[in-house]
Image 1 (cartoon, helix red, strand yellow):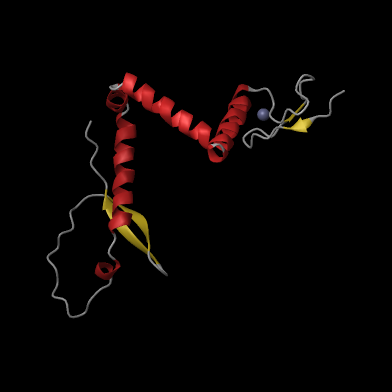
Image 2 (cartoon, protein in one colour; image 1 turned 180 degrees about the vertical axis):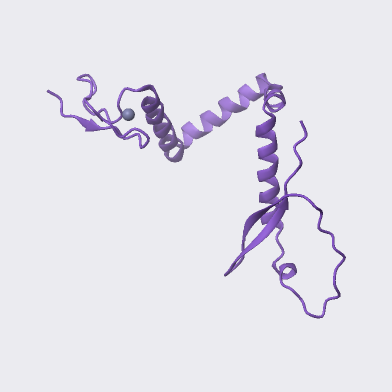
Length: 144
Ligand SMILES: [Zn+2]
């Protein structure tokens, strides 16, 4: 009889008996565990095989050229996705353009006009050279 193994899918981790045809089976036969196995295989293959990576990139490019409206239609259907994506891009842009000199208070500076808009804000960690600073981003009002 086959020795039982622990499924490598970290969301599962259950004991299972490998199929006799697949003695090196490391993931149980549940659908989500088989998906995890394929994802892991694909991740390793993309990291290690340049030809595989190029072939996949070309295939994706061809598919996009044959389906030019797909992304536009997807974004039209998935409003939450679009909103979240814009928010995250704004955060990335803030991090990229952060100017550390302007974040340090100057005592001889005349007080600036209050330009803070009312609304909800979110703190964003901004990484400095040797310290962590926080910036804020104003949350867009949901328009739907
Ligand atoms: Zn499993």
